[in-house]
Length: 153
Image (cartoon, rainbow, N blue to C red):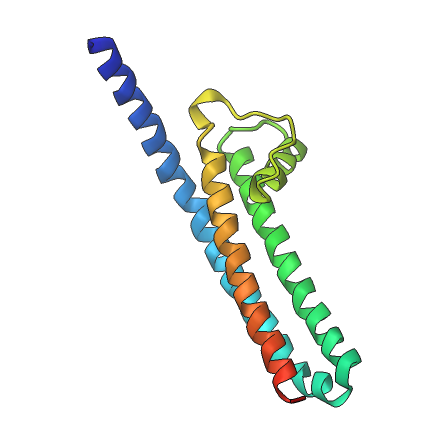
């Protein structure tokens, strides 16, 4: 029984360390995403009239611009996680860190790269953060598309 309690305590400590460490890239991603969404909103405000004036073609140009900004924002967030893996010494090579991050962020998980045992839970934090960021992007994109189409009815 003592061995089991000791193992549980060790597991608890490992996840506490991972949770605390993951707060750094999570916070960075939220800030990056807020900046990216702000940029997308500014782009939309600047070109909204173009989208309404040129009908379907203009609307799609505006949507493509907003989506491009959001994709770049997500890519910067992937790079932030990659830097985290690299700077914490979790993964030794930049290419490996970014490849792992892309797979964790998109929840694809097919990179074949595994984290050291004491860090294996961190990728779940990246995936959870990415799901929130994708949801945030989707919500903003839905509002923008709705605004673009509201003038045509």
